[in-house]
Length: 128
Image (cartoon, rainbow, N blue to C red; front, side, top):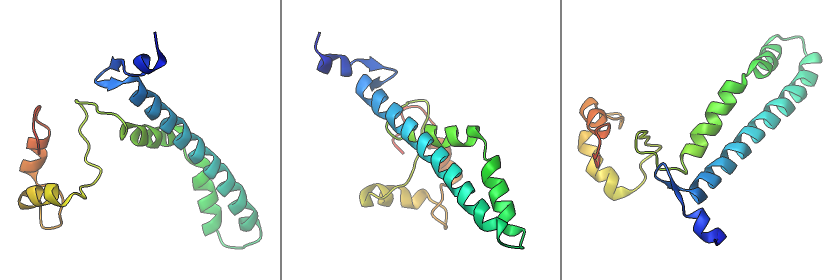
């Protein structure tokens, strides 16, 4: 059996290749967020020790209290962008002019989704 064929196997509407890419994206996002959180907290803590204000201390405390659940949620959200999961419909953004023109009459004045658009977008088989 060739590796190319294995990567095309389908699991929950996605190829094994898509799942691998999503897994790699998940790991990279989670690792980067943990590293950035740790480095940023250390750097800001050194700065906070030299100042008399409490604002920088609060920021350091906030960074240190950032839970892994938040980091994992952000990593899942990033990885999901590489998968087609039919039961989960998420619109990240609409930059395509034709698609935006089709949606524009159903948007609110602030370009957010109207209630009828939201309901129809959640229906199985909907193209909106």
